Image (tube, rainbow over the protein chains, first blue to last red):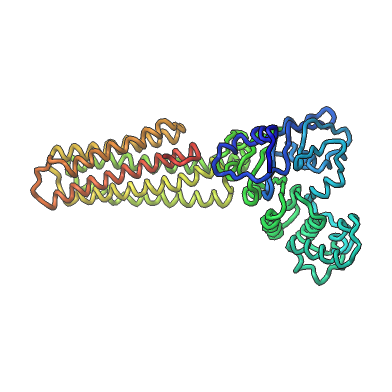
Length: 277
Length: 211
């Protein structure tokens, strides 16, 4: 990938700490936030965010409630615009294209940038219909093609063996952990580039949580994942990079092992060790 | 009590057990000087018996550390402190063993050569000062003192070389010579353990290995 001068400086801004660390390997950037600001009316919720996320990596965003982490992740697929009175400034580049530009198609963006939410939210339809919903609205009508997509997506979401004999059952009849994996399969069915996860396991039991975490490790071979989590052990276990948000600022963005073993900023140290507040 | 406050108190208890263990060893160093200078075999015997007290605190520290790791899932400086306390306790326990070994030697042998005796007791006094300072550095998070302590092990090593290689020997008794060499070696090992403790404190404070 050819880097422009401008882009190199943006990476430098975002990764000052990373560049000094010899252990860091840099894949291609998928998202680069440049001086990104966001206001909810008068409330300045995100302040000069400079971050870059890389291909085939899991990036975790941690921080106390109200720090702006969910707002930021929802900015990456422009879902945040659904909130009335939102104003943004700066750039978020997705593969070199500023997603905040007026000519950016939100539908196209959300196809490439899928999202999994805190609570499993399958449609009140069959498992098959849930997964084939996306491809269908993208115009795929052929049953055989849809069958293949459904099977591939369910396999990728590590739930095929559990549901292959009851694809026509209602997805509501599945357990919470299974429903969440159906939602992941539904996201994968439209072949996204990036999967955003907003606290994907906080409503799940420990066994289902481990299954989703294992799944994330498999998925990162093909996709890039950005996850917001309140569970710091989870961030430490699954992610390659971690960003710590506090009061709308990125305090530290670094290799996950540095964040949890020897963070550079005292505020990060205070947060991960639970000394905050 | 908030969960974090309880955790902070538990970490303080863990630290204070290290200080307690170190204090006991510091007293043992003073007694060891008396044992050697006065050939006090009763005190030597007491030193050997009381090693169990040191061992017991090491077990307590390990148990505390395991509980804290289980209950608190510590990270960053908290985790480094707990891991370092486990390792410091192990080094302190080994220092206790070496003190017992020297006491054991003293029960069997009287060192009459004044020059040798002076060098051995100097090694003990240097070790005591190093250990005392290591605990000060741990209490005050004093990184420059930690660096100094680690370097001071060389002083003990130099005396060890003097004792083992120099021509100050007038001993003709091979057994006594052997026991003197053993004592010097035990003291040299004690210096190494205190150097290790310095390195563990360095890791706790900085998150980096001492180079």
